[in-house]
Image 1 (tube, rainbow, N blue to C red):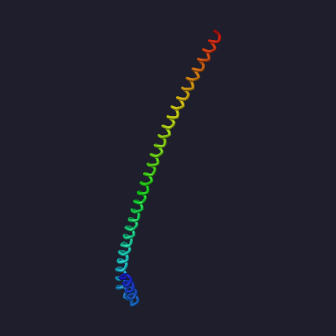
Image 2: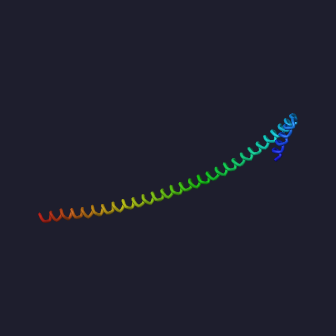
Image 3: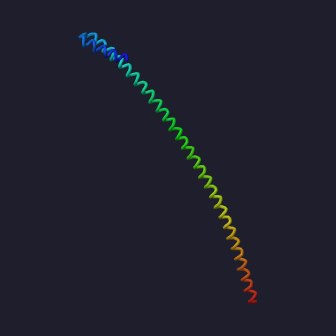
Length: 122
């Protein structure tokens, strides 16, 4: 408001051909305008710095959540892998037991067949 009043006063003085006074008022108005623009720029910078800080904090929060989620999923994957490994080990152990049992029974059968065939020949 003060700046507008100074500019109007400058124009009136120029119209009245008081050029020296008009120049003085113009210089004061220019100085006041520069100060106001500097203040506006400072406020704008503060606002954008606050916004940037808030944005960075939000991004950091999202990143932390994402890292936690990745870590949790990795742990789940490792647990599942360990369970699968234990299941496969047990399956392998059972298969060995079954195969060994079959081998023993086949060996007994073969031994009895040989014994039987020897008893027939004798």
